Image (cartoon, rainbow, N blue to C red):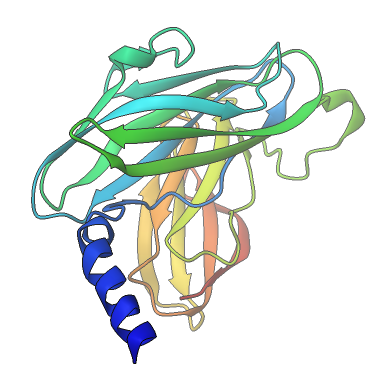
Length: 238
């Protein structure tokens, strides 16, 4: 009985701390930079403030292994920052229940083959216990040592990842002919249209939210100038 009372008292004392648990969810899954030497890629970081009040977060630190020839920048809207030099300038303002979609990571893959990972820790400027972490990894390949099976006439397109997907399904791409019209169409297993996305030649990543999809098998098709180029499978899980 005494132990039970002590345990109950401990829970009561810790309740304020538990109530201040992380309230920002990182919706972007498997932030991965994968490409050839010398390339630069941009990934969208989608964040959701699950609190009923606005919050401001600052970048506390960047941890992990970023090679000497790799560079990472954090972009918020049109402003980009070097986290190693501009740590104190990087702030995120999230409104109550807001989903933030204009934060990006720009990553220069460098001049040497490498693999590694890093993470960015953000802390609430008014509550140091309120933190969230954005995790990322990278893989740099020498193009002379591989063959890209997704290298089409007007565009280079990665396979969808992660696959299976839970919240976000993502494609990496690069236009070789920026006047070409490219789009990705998503269809259900029985062929019903689900969604369609036009690829922006000024970007290199397409992030598709699939959290509201029913779990199961879908198919995505790449169209170039309204011509069906390739169809592949996408699996959605809960």
